[in-house]
Length: 289
Image (cartoon, rainbow, N blue to C red; front, side, top):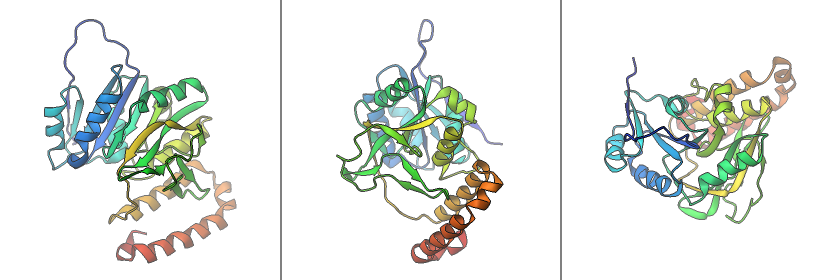
């Protein structure tokens, strides 16, 4: 059985103040990034919020170091690596804010990032999720993603990748948020059942966005919210397996069978494209596809 240990925040006197936002960060062996990430969050996010760190059984003492340096952060320590989705769902169970904000540990946030996300949701009652303008940490004049683009076959791409920082300066609806930095209404997250824990890793943000849109909500891109992300397009040993498996799961959940039959030619073309990519770029792990 998985064991979860929670470090409570410092005790305060008087009645509890309703929190506007709960910022949830899931980390796995992220010591190289975590201190800068937490420092930027605590310095830029005001006081009407809480920060929850979910440590997925890191072997690099991430949780211990964070506890020593940031006693105001609530830390949940898991005995096993639960994956991205389940880790975030666990953090959400302990959260008390009206808005849930999910952030990758390899990010650094800029002043005003949180207020911009929440204000965008408050200004638009049809918007359920809001995502930041995410720039490349190692090249901050270039974009990582401004929300994500989803093809009808489920293939998901970073919108605006490597475009100039000056581009994409309008607040607008997008197909999906980026899991690296986004906010969601708490009631919507609970209505959707949170992240799909079967995914373990990759595509959780696309799946959550797609389900929210099917339920009648919009996903917003908010350019005033700036986040830097240490992003490199690279293939880890199991990345293709999780991305492709989870794409199929998402299609089966979100589309009816008649729709899938109509889309069969496009889905077949997607197979040629993905097989071609794997043969060219990840032949060593061909079995994952």
